Length: 592
Image 1 (cartoon, rainbow, N blue to C red):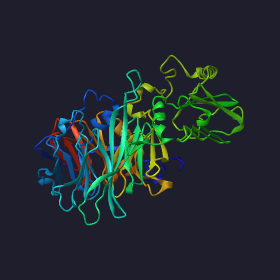
Image 2 (cartoon, rainbow, N blue to C red):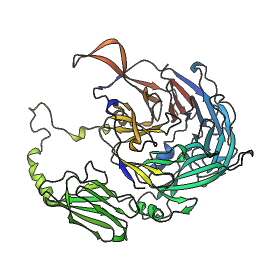
Image 3 (cartoon, one colour):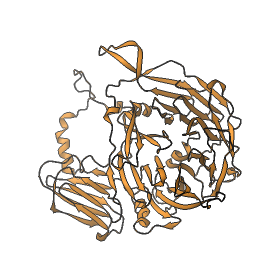
Image 4 (tube, one colour):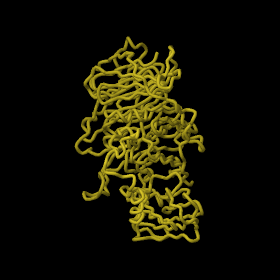
């Protein structure tokens, strides 16, 4: 199955080009406080967990979990090893959190332990990690009907080094109940040494399938049936399993690839995939290109020791594809302008790069880009002659004065006056869909500079949604694995949220409710920001600058929590926002 490159299709009807700004509302937000009997089981990073990946995976972990099947119910784990539940029926009469499960093992004895993690697998099942390497699969009964019932562990097993749970699902096929659980680990890379570049750590995703092995009429007995391992070099922004376990979607800055199945190293070509990816970890950009009026020269970085038999090269008049046998292409797409395939050629240089010479069909015009639309994986290099000529042509635009012509109404642009929120992330991420059977990527989306913002569970029957920054807006995307031609659907837009969230230097969490009525940002301490969707106004308002009537206003509200403790959890429902600190659980009444 060949991998296909896709792009996210924005629904223009969900954009609001006339959106002006958020209006600060001084209307207070009701806040209700629940004091906890025991502190939340917070695990702080150790000196050995110094990388950015450790901070993203564990330092920014959301300790509060919401039940997608019953949104008024939230869960967390306290320092006594108890899984506690708070179900809200009346905001003014909040009770104490109720214990639903107590971990029998003491995870504190593990020196390398991580934070305990919880994932709701179905309406009647949940998966739990104690942070020390043990995985629990718990039968919870129908939580909507009775949230106070004790959970029953039907699977408890050591799965190796400490991990956190990213996602889990449940399904029944041919009468056999199975649960798919996705685990995350950051491990010391055994192939690295003290003189090698990088952090010395690698990231692994472990896809575990646990099934009921008991025959009909016998007591349920769950065992691990399948273990699939992926390796990468960055913590994924997004990772989720498809319904029925038919596939996996991963969004990350560095690529992931399957390396092991049931502990066995995959055969060629997948067995060497991780090795090849590790060689490219610090080789971005993957290719460089130069041009003259007659031709274009592209130098593509390759694994050391590459031979001509390993190279996959396809060139047509308007398209090119360059890669290594058995792997996704390193350079692929539509060329900016036609070339002459017969007059073009490639050669391996120093057994570690491939130099491609493309003969232009039309001499003279210089290409602004190698591939139409760009792929974010290459870099253009100017020759010294081209650089000198460009400087000569632009000399008349330069001056030693900040404003050479002060009489003009508009001063020149000064890059130093730009704010941090005006910029875009330099790192480029890819969104990849892997097939559950072949374990090969089937769809790849280059996210470019679309900054990842947050992940949210909107519908328990579907995969989690993810939010990306597009220009100044924040767009919410829903994976549709059953629609190969439109696998990621744009379902909602939060106007200007991409710009707004970038200005919050202390932002730790971001989320939204299932009905998209607002977006919420949470800082590390105390403050919570609410950005509501535009709504009709009761009174007649006019825009004094444009002299037109304003029919809708988008409100911004700010709430301050009565706590000096760091915010550890942040979840939203259509009516409420839940904020967890080490000793308190705050309930903010957002909508009636």
